[in-house]
Image (tube, rainbow, N blue to C red; front, side, top):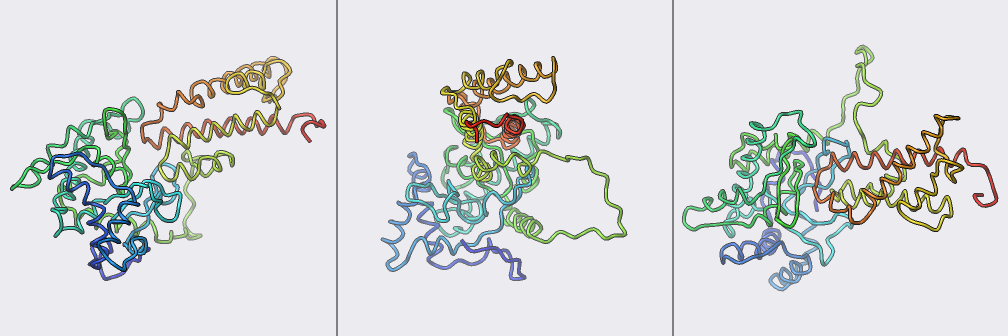
Length: 393
C-alpha cells in the first residue's frame, strides 16, 4: 500500500479514490454489508475471495496492484514498548502482517477510514460513524468509571454485544445491525491501540489503561477522527529535536520503562515479529519455548517441560548452575530459580496454559516476555561459568 507523505493537499485517508480502489473496497465489504441487511451471519472475507471477485468484475485489473495503491499512514507506537508502528493504518487491514502481501487464506477488512470512503456505497458512512460512536461511548465510560492509574485486576472487560444498540439506530429508514464479531475484528486494527479480547462468548474491549482517550469527545465525527490520525502519524514520523548544549539533561531513572528492545536477544528473535504484529499469545509461547529448547540443547538431558528444568537446575550439582553466590546463599538461589524455571514450564509453556493469553493485552504480554528474558540471562550466567568439557565444546 502507498506510503504516507505529509503534504498540503490534505488528509491522504480522505483523498479521492480511483474507480478501481473504490471497487476493491466494495468487494471487501460486500459479504459483511449483505449479511447485515439480510439478517444473516458473516465475517470478513479471505483475500482469495476478494481477489477472485474483484478481477471477475473488473476485467484487466489486478487486485493486488490496487491493494498496494491504497493510501496509508505510519503505524503508531503502542505507547508501552516503544516498538515503532505495529502496522501501517489505512483504508483496509489484514489479519497477518508476516508477509509483504496478503496470503490467499488471510482475512481482510475495512477500517473506519475505509468505510468512510465508501460514503456512496452500501450505506458505509453510517457504519464508520457507528463504529466511532461505539469507541466514543466506551472511552467515556472508561473516563468516568476507571481510575487513570489502574492496571491488572482493576481493568474491566466490556462485551461488544452491549453496544450493538448503537447500530440499530444508525440508519433512520431501516434497522441496521452489525454483529459484534465483525465489529471486534474491525476495531482491533484501528490506528490508536485498543486492547481487544476474543473468547467463546464473543468480543470484548478491555478498559482501564486509558487507551481509549483518543476517542473521547469525537461522537460520530469520522472526519475529525481521521484528522487526528494523520496529525498523530505526522508527529510520530517527524524527526526528534536534539537537545542543545545549553539545556541541562533531565535527571532520569536508570530504566524508565520496560522495553522490548532491551530484552534478551533470544526473546527478541523468538517473539519480536509476533509481538510487533499484535500476536501476543504466540509471542509468549515462542519466547518460553526458546528457553526449553536452549536448556535441552545445553544439557543434553532427554526430558522436557518441568522435568527438564528440575534436572537441569537441581540444587545440588546442577548441569546449569545459576547461582551467583557461594555457600547457603548459592544453594538458596539454585532452589529458587529451579522453582522459577519449573513454574514457567507448568504455568506458561504448557500448551494448556495458552488460554491465559487469549486477551489482546500488550502490557501483560510484555511482562511475560520480560520474565522469559530474565530466565535467558540466568542461563547466560550458568553457561559462562560452566566448566569446559568435550561435551560442551
